[in-house]
Length: 295
Image (cartoon, rainbow, N blue to C red; front, side, top):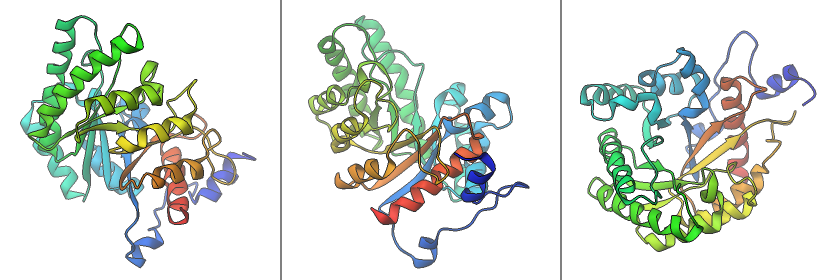
């Protein structure tokens, strides 16, 4: 990147503030092959600092970014899963701003691959309340983690049991249980795809994250997981002067996604440090909107 100022100029952000320009597709009335949502983690610094509350996330997303799909992170309203007054308020705020509640990302509720059977079962039960909350909010899914200790085969056996139970519970409320490649063995696309194939339930699938593959080839990983995808996480860190992500070939990634005949939400998850959270979200949105009609 030649300079941050040049990049922001190319991005279309003015120094005095951010201006929103509607996509040309809006005027054309063309149905896009994927919709864009925003993962709440993209704003985690702002939230941890106390400058944004979860209850205001839908309105903030719509008014500041022109994005009308949100992906919540449970740790930002951890004590509200059963608080119906809070959930009703959150739902109303989303509806008032034309925002679709897409999913809830679940962390910190125990290991679904725990080798201790009692702990594994408790972890499964800990997720029930979030399935109920997702159903109330009109989400289509919760995102869970496939973590555990032991050999690949041992973790697989435990995770398969947990996912099967959760999927059966979610089926009643038409909630899918989707697994993200989120570190450890789950970031091996072939292993996670095998887990989901073994579960074999329509409402149990994947949430491929472009960035969370580490030692496993990211393009192969997304290819492995797309047959089971109920959503896609568009991870970004940094951009060049032309607005392209510097670590991930987004054109190549989106071609893999489209080849799988995916139709749904691609969620922005900006985790960079060179741009502010807001600038990074806009940069990711602009990249997706630029490539979407070309693929």
